[in-house]
Length: 534
Image: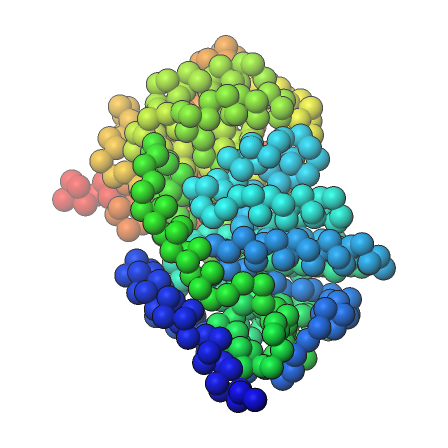
């Protein structure tokens, strides 16, 4: 009878020869395996305790509160296996099931919810979550997983956040995902939560450790798929086919594909991506502008609490539409109750500036990239996000949003000053991101509270066009002077961050913020004026 070593060698020899060439090609294009985070995963699972049969896997699933399933993204069998586990657990009864996925950013939960409610179809979901652009693997098996969750589960949640490409931030993504899973647990306390996440995140010191701290007492089971070292070791077992192995009490590994199958699938994707030749994707550019401003203001994108920081800013990032998605954007605006007047205003802005930020739906529309306007709108988004994006995150209906926005059109002092502060922040941010933007063509002498009050009173009595232009002119002027004060070292990023976080919808607050800014600028201008005349 052949020894374990001989069995392993004979079963593996041909595959190892084929695998060597594939791995050489992958290494030439992807050097990430040398990163410490991935090395920790590859070194974590080298041995197993025992073989498992199907019923033992089911018993382990039924006793868990959270099931972390390792995903090899390029392998369709990995997503289909996750779907089968979820479906089996649901059909067995006893407890409801919920699905969380790395594939969809948490910021896009509202899109996923629309698909769940059957308000949008599969194609719109795929485009709006940027599946092909941001993920790029096979859609069909992932869509099958989502459908299985919709057919058999209580809910589906997106768990990931940016940046995916920077492995130096991968620990922050683990902490973010753990916080999101804990929130799901609070919403669905009786459910089994299935989580499909990249396999490297499931090393004991990665997501599982963070999750155990976040959810003390919860029973967490890790289900790995097709781990190389375990596969090669199991090849020495006398059984013709090993279905699964128990690594320890909290970790098991199933086998539904060979290492060669895994890496060939990934190599094919690398080849496919290298041949991609689509039109411009503006989203990375917009996100980079936002991220640059966030770093400048020393904002923690992953803060789990409101206060001096916005809560989970990474989950508020906007959708970005380009010229090829005109029809989809129009359907979205109509479905969200955006008025015809607002839509016409948006289109006029795009015609003039090349792009526009639409706070009603938290989305950018970019037809032509013009840095100065994109920088200003990126700042407008960040200002909205620092205030919690109330239009979307407070759960307002389309009718409520429309009614409130119609109310905002009433020309009041509060509305005027809110618009002034918004324009001031937007202009300041555009100068930070695009310093060559010229100052507004106006008197650069210090502003006064009396002059701003006079402008406000006149604007309230004027028509809507004059109302808006007056607010913009005064806001741009204030924003320009704030930038000058910043260049002179008189204003710090932390002080500016407080300006972004001020909730302008509170009665009278925008007026106070504007008055305080003008007073501060006047006090800062005096020593500057004396030195100029020395």
